[in-house]
Amino acid sequence: MWEELSVVGDNIVLNEEDDTITWSFNSNGQFSVQSLYAIINHRGVTPVYVQAVWKLNIPPRVHFFLWLLSNNRLLTRDNLAKKRDVSDPSCLFCKDCESISHLFFQCCVAKHVWAAFSIWLDRMMGEYFESITSLWIANKRYMICNIVSSTVMWVLWKLCNLLCFQGVPWSGMKRVFAMIGQMLRGWLPMFKMDVQEKVEMIIQLAETEAKSALLIKWRMDISESVQSSAQPSEVSGNATNMTSNRP
Image 1: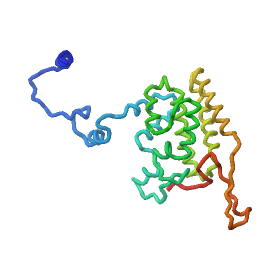
Image 2: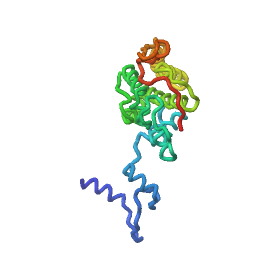
Image 3: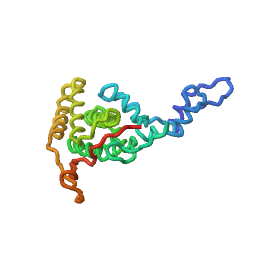
């Protein structure tokens, strides 16, 4: 302890100037509301994964998307409701209230995707946000997991916006896996050869899942005829066919 104090004391420079009050939570020593807000929300410490996101081996637009996600600035319906009235706060996939946590981790669609990739990568993924971001810090060790998880969240966001703004109908989990495989294949030239080989294996698994036969069950209302009442729905996903407009 004494040696540590001695080291600290050696770095102190004494002079004849009067002592001044300094705000230690700002680099210029001056108080600001912004620095106080950071202390209240993060106890003065910015989560390390926020900086780590820029070192991931992914396209720049996905860097920015993950940065927005990490700072809770994506315009999910709960965040939109902070700015204006939102008539329908429900998730486009499952009709629960939409938030970042729900859309990317708690929704039935997200859970189905994370369960598949957890098996393929032999690592539990997507249980909650920190289960993903904790791997960003050790990107060299978990590069494949980070590439895949970034792709999954990017695709979920893009698909959500396709349903909302372009009126694309929900067509089942197969579309999700197809988009993930297509996205990863487009990123392959970014990676070194050894990384490409590992990502290619994941792509093949996703494409195989996307091409697998649909499982259909039929719901029948006994008060109507078979032709008018039977409606198909996919067993492997809890989401149903629907289109919706984001307010």
